[in-house]
Amino acid sequence: MSEEVTLDEFAKGDESDAQKQRWKKVQLHQVAYKRSDNVNPQEIELEKHIGLEHIDPNNPVPDWEPLDDLSSTKRRFEAGDILFAKLRPNLEKSAQPNFEGVASTDIFPIVSEASLNSKWLLYRLSSKPAYDYARRTSAGTRMPRTSWNLFSNFDFHASLAKTHTSVE
Image (cartoon, rainbow, N blue to C red; front, top):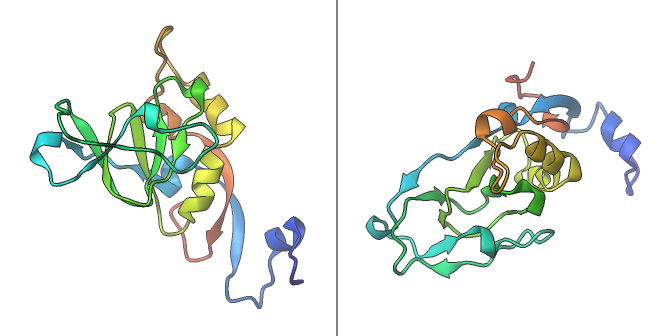
């Protein structure tokens, strides 16, 4: 491949290349999972909380607030998890914090499997097709929400390591 790789060259790959990859159509649940660790913020040692108001569209770096007096159940996330807003997906909110903390239960913390780069997955989940799919799978009129059971069926093409076999 040339030093400035074109998309065609990247997709075809070079069979002698140590980083042998292939493009394959996958569903989200085949390459990632939802972290489901619900916690009481008063019973944990974490300091940072991310709510929907802390994620701006088109900005992968979220704001946060101290836990302080928060008392309702929250969902734990780790640095590098993708935070995808399931409530009102028309607002197109997703981010990837570089710290651990807790998030609103209206946010999915999504963990990329080792076969897929998490930054690339954030890019893919921040795309119009992903948000459109989340909107189509949402229920409710005033406060529409998608569910993981539906959203995790979102399909897309991904470049996976040749050793990955769960999507065969």
